[in-house]
Each structure stands twice: as structure tokens, then as C-alpha cells.
Length: 167
Image 1 (cartoon, rainbow, N blue to C red):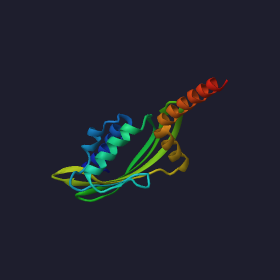
Image 2 (image 1 turned 180 degrees about the vertical axis):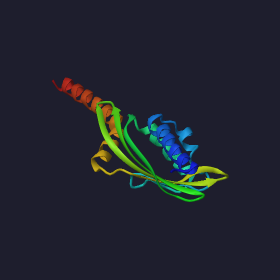
Image 3 (image 1 turned 30 degrees about the vertical axis):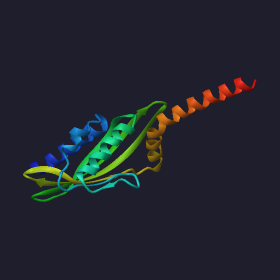
Image 4 (image 1 turned 45 degrees about the vertical axis):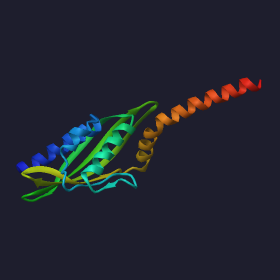
């Protein structure tokens, strides 16, 4: 049987993921994070942050950069350990991403550590893992899709103009 503390951690995890990935609501998602102590490890090589400010900056840049919309295909949340003032939740989520000329599925695995902070349950540690390398390539392709489309459009026009001048 789950305690109140465990249920709250599960509910907070689901809400935060939906706010950020589905709603792209950074302000709402950040309300679940502890402002005094926070560590976040993302899927990228340089995605290790040790403060609320760094995580906040990363979240806003992510939302500004990623053009696709996400839908949750399947999800599984579990409390793996808890004590009187802390709790660890793991989540396995399959997403469907839709962007211009690019639709793909990818999985993310999360570990969230919650701790009581001023009598409120807050996230103090997050680790995000992408188990499939191909998914990472799609996600990075999604980030670059707009600049690639702009490049292709410009390159096509340049080639057409060049051929017109030299004919």
C-alpha cells in the first residue's frame, strides 16, 4: 500500500512531465523543483546542471529550440524507495513526436529524487536516459529541422539563380 508521500511523488512526477514535454509549460514544470538544491542530468553530453538557475535556463532553451509536439504513447511510474522525508520515482515513457516532415517515437527513462523542503515535496535530483541511440538522432534532427529546411530552400534558390545567370 502506498503512503500519502509516495502518492504525492507519483502525482508530481506525472504532472511535471506533462507540463514540460506535452504542454511546454516551463514555469509550471519548474514549480516542482527545489530552488536551493537541484541536480539534473539530461541525455546530452553537456546536460549536467547543478542549480535551479541552470535547469531553468536549459528548460527554456529546450522549449525554444525543439519544434515538435509530443504525445505520450505509454507510461509506467514506480516508487522504488522511500523514507520519512525522501522518495525515488522512476518513470518509463514512450513518446510520439510530430514535427515538419518528421514523425518518430522515442523512449525516455527518468529517475526523480524527491525530498521534503519546507514541508513540501520537491524534486532535488533528476536523471533522464534515452535507451535507444536512434531516438537521440531523431531528437537532434528535430532540433535542426528548421535550419536544414531554411538551408535547403536557400540552396535551391541559389542553384536556380546561378543556372539562370550562366545560361
